[in-house]
Length: 87
Image (cartoon, rainbow, N blue to C red; front, side):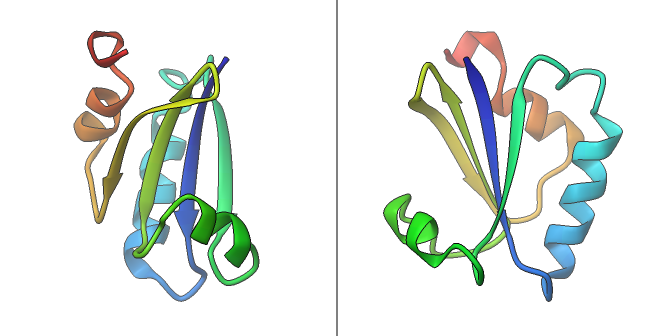
């Protein structure tokens, strides 16, 4: 199973922009479960995954972390994050 966790915060402008980019990539990401985690609401999960800044994307395959990126990224970077070559 493939999963992309998106750690964000309501006050974060970069997070809102990244959320729009993920929405724009909806077709390309259709086979990946996307989980949005608000770091202010789910602090335990954020700490457990060592998320210290937002936005952060963590890509998992078969429950194992494959790659991670923090900060504002573009559509191409998102697709590179989940590229089969990195798995």
